[in-house]
Image (cartoon, rainbow, N blue to C red):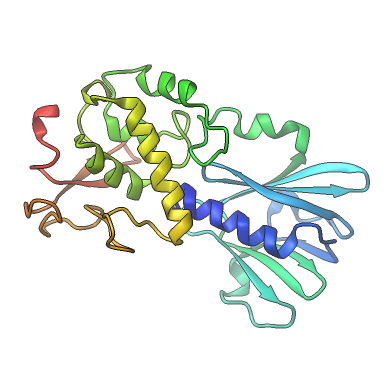
Length: 264
């Protein structure tokens, strides 16, 4: 599943292709929206909240929001009119067409359309967005510390605590903080700094176009998917383990020397 920075970059690409343009045709290959036609709609822009994409439109005097989520396999692609799509047509879930270009959402995990005024009902349960210009750090900190005995990695992956962190940044953030991802929230020495680091990592990912966390080693990471490889800092083999609620476990990674298990 894409991290918050990748979703932010997706929104930026959609904006470049669609913002301010009139839709000449739409095709919703989603059961609940199969008969919807938004031809003539003006695209106001696409925003994000964590891993959620919010494309706002004006159609027949109504302000509407197209809410999409990439889940595990989804992706939006911008294609010049008449060009072959980069993925099979049966994977397309949404097609938004303008003069000369079209945005195609493939294998999307969620597609909804509702009045923009109702956005709160769709994303209001989420925690503060780490990518937001006005990040609400006090609220994020309150949510994180609400259950001090909770496993840290589980809390950071919970989008109702803070929105935007996935498995890559979970592992990298815990490494940089010197915190064990399977330790408790209460074991984190400076949780406010943890949140600020997470915010900076996502911003760096947007700047570089990919997760880049290991100092000046562009395009590299400290521990993510590096199990059994030597730690880039101390040489100790990286370990891997599971984190998350039963049935929704994710693999995470840590250096047993830089992130001692004494914090468990």
